[in-house]
Length: 481
Image 1 (cartoon, rainbow, N blue to C red):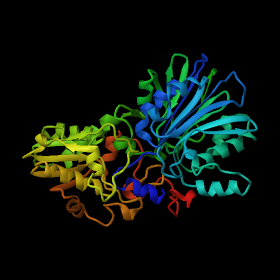
Image 2 (cartoon, helix red, strand yellow; image 1 turned 45 degrees about the vertical axis):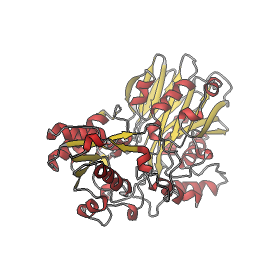
Image 3 (cartoon, rainbow, N blue to C red; image 1 turned 90 degrees about the horizontal axis):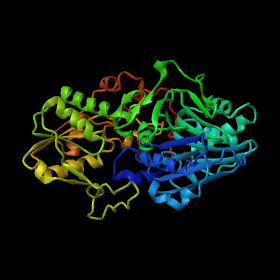
Image 4 (cartoon, one colour; image 1 turned 135 degrees about the vertical axis):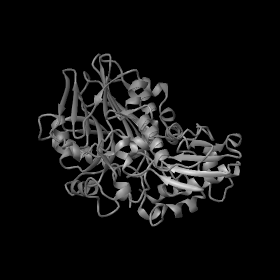
């Protein structure tokens, strides 16, 4: 990730997910653009930098794709007139936050490629660890890149493999043998909609159905938004091909279950609480995290509060387990996206205060347990603890519904280099002093498995043990150097 983005988010100290994807194929020939729009709206939490939609008519000319993308939120980029002009019964959409590749309109997705066999539109969530190497190989064979994102490397490989295969899904499978890392992909060809999930299953992907239409998307909450029923999750390593003849599945890239490695942060933070991922409720996982914190790190207090939004369910779990009342201490400004103009360091306005205010009446004279989903750099935590104390809280006990971050992530989450992590080279007691809390405790790492019903998951950012060898250099943001 570029330094510019590090600076931009330094004040926020939040983690960001890479992207959300949504594809649809209406076998009755109806236009899908407006449904994709609402699906992306439901996935807005996964990316707030840019978005795009590409659609095509399966009975029309083979190479014609109508696409529109831009910087900003879904409702800022698309107008009713834009959507009205996008005719097509098959399509794919994307919301983006950049972890590799800078924040520019060129890097917005879906990517649309015209090549010998027609067109491909591709939307990708994740991060490849060998993208730089693959990119150099392609460049030396004459490839010209329009973007600085690894998704274009995937698209090139699929297009190239398609020249030597019978079908586009075979080309996707052959490309998957070359790419390494985290990816949930949706590929639109002239007559097929294809979903693919990396063999470790880092990122979620699921299938839905509405009337005579099929949908592939990042999270089940997007299916409910568009009144579609959940069919099933795409398996880690599976490639699904949707045509009017049915859904075809290829599991040749699937690994043994114990080799799977879902990103645990989907359950802790990224996913919407009303989603289910691989059969596990995100909301229930967060409730359990709070309960485990209460069991393992109890403290006497008068009130349990969550830092919105993802701290709220864990706070409720802590309250249910401990018997300490659950309350609301923070009022969140719902209109602040990640794109708002950040106050300068010299300004008196604080980035945190613009987003959150404390309800003084709720905390005055009370011992407060504050539940947050993570502490990254610590720059926000000390301000929020300070705000609670200024509002009259007599004690602030911080409980974190994840273990401490000790290592960077290379698979689509923008956990920074180790030196920038507050937990690096500091004890829990040291961190407690830095953020000004009266006590501090993190979720025990052995609780993660219990939280997700023993689904295999990745703990690389906590343990440094990654499911595959990490790159020897920090690849994030490498292309624009």
